[in-house]
Image 1 (cartoon, rainbow, N blue to C red):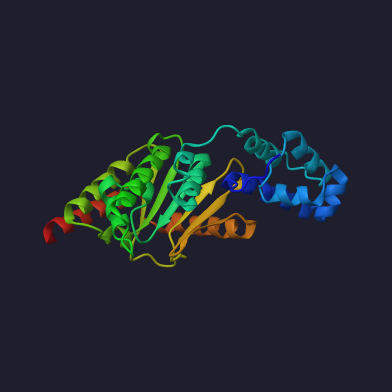
Image 2 (image 1 turned 120 degrees about the vertical axis):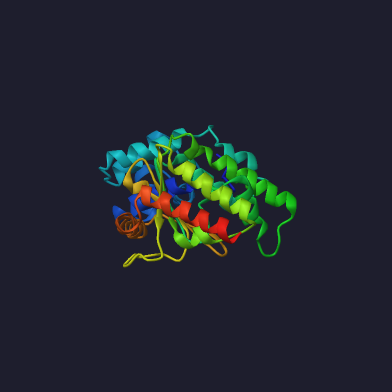
Length: 287
């Protein structure tokens, strides 16, 4: 089987879970290879996501590593059986950076999404004009065709929450609701769209106000994507140099704790809508 030169996010995650399974059993790569009739190089490639494995081999590895977490094994088997069913984002593989594709892949397979933004309205809730303005403020400036491409991709990503198929909670810091990237009309249209989005049954918009006390507020925007089981949850964090994915149990547990406190300290859905409307009225008064 030819090695993959660019494994997808899900393929790499399968490899990570295979490595964790092996390490929890106290096996080295050579030990596992001997136990299942493979070579150490094959174990290395499987754990890097560079080569696929069958469901049968997965179950052999799980049994050899004494893994009794059947829900995890079944979830990993589901990843394996996805082969041949590429996501819509693959259409953009030669046009956009990998970060964009992996964000869409993460969202496309999530069972629930939670985001926190402190600098702008979440991408999954942005209007076309607002998204274009955000991309248009990049330094150095992006060419117009690149702004249009990124905006179109972001709009397509929104289908995952617009369809209502994936429950979505957006925690938005008040600072993000006051940050302007374009003129007053783009800004107020975005606030209107945010209120409209908050009224969807599967979408919850919660504002984190300036006045809140005791909130463990990260400085970065992040997404918490729930997998089919908690062991496959993932955190994606935006940085100035791109996005990073975290799936180590300690990282995931930290952000679960952050979200618990954020839920208790943010405004209710109704209070959040009222604040958004209030900010819109202020914008109308001051132009």
